[in-house]
Image 1 (cartoon, rainbow, N blue to C red):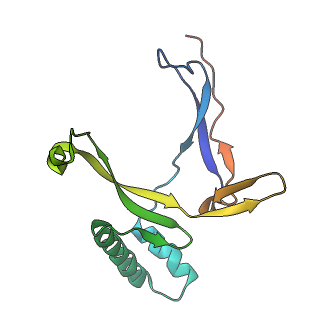
Image 2: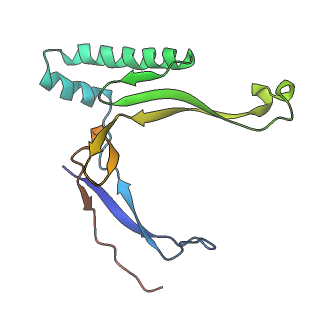
Image 3: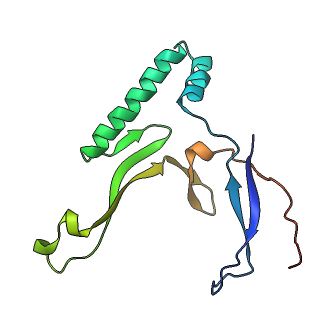
Length: 144
């Protein structure tokens, strides 16, 4: 199994990196709760309907805990927390969510693991161990 990518060239006028090449991953499939339940059912003694019930309740409980200000940690996957982006106010008294809140979002931080070598110390995202990349198709340069 590999993650596919395509190359693209920065063509934004005024960009510091105009003309440079980058890669973007390409989503090859969308997996929903039913497919996840089928995959899990194949690896355990639970029925698909039981797995769907657990996954549905999991999303409900995660939402509730996020709305209560909790960080939700799922071992082997990572953690979720609410973050906000705000506009400044001149004083604490001037700051209100109605005037200053730009947006709220959920931040996901994947679980990482330490990689200790004699030369360096790094952390890698645990769920991506063994990641292999493959170019989806060769980029064809066309004359404009």
